[in-house]
Image 1 (cartoon, helix red, strand yellow):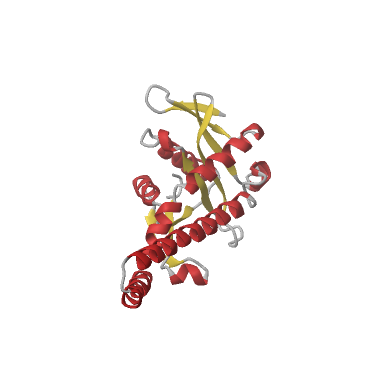
Image 2 (spheres, rainbow, N blue to C red; image 1 turned 90 degrees about the vertical axis):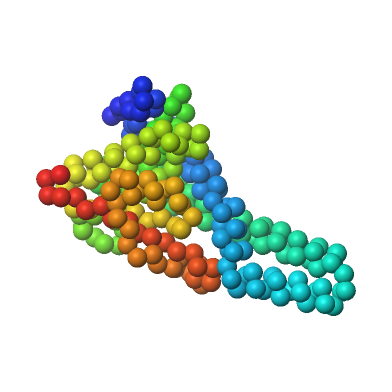
Amino acid sequence: MAWEVGEAGGFLLREFQPGDADAVRELFAAGMGEYGPALCAHVFQQPWVMLTLTGAFLLLVASAHSLLLPVLVLALLLAAGHLVLGQIWAQYIRRCLSQDLKDIGDAYAPQCGARFWVAEAGGQVVGMVGARPEEGHGPSGVLELKRMVVRRDHRGRGVGKALGRAVLAFACEQGCRAVVLVTHRLQREARSLYLSLGFRPETPQPFPSFYGRLVDFTLTRYRYDLAPGE
């Protein structure tokens, strides 16, 4: 099933087809890769990180009696930090690609109560979103919205809202009582989109790892309750 949406039929919203797999994975990797610089900025703005770097800089200034060496060392530390954080984020993206996005047709099979959509414009995949029963909760009647990405040059055109509404409409068809999703703190545009669709945030929780807690990296669960018969 496919339908034209957006201003003057600007893009096509349709269900995922096997031939979309590579384009979907590339779009996901590119979209998530955009958060790498924001992650670095967030980590370096943590008080303990700033204090550590400042302390190291001042100690070097006091011992070297020159600014050149401290500046070079600080620059190297920042560059190394960017490199390490970039590798960590790239590893996270690879892990996502090896999970449900490895075999999208199987992970989002209709017989599992799941579905995956893409937005197409000019013959290219410019948006994506998946929906499947929430993991770890059994037959709870709760659908989870996953892997929402819109290509940067197509944001602000209603693609994200159309994808989100497709998930909500599917949840209604399935008789679900709610739709949930999880975002990380760097996804500011996504959070605004979900709020505009009617989702409500719950209390942010630390990322479930030592490093996530160390740098105050939080996840927020959003929920959209469906009224009976909606």
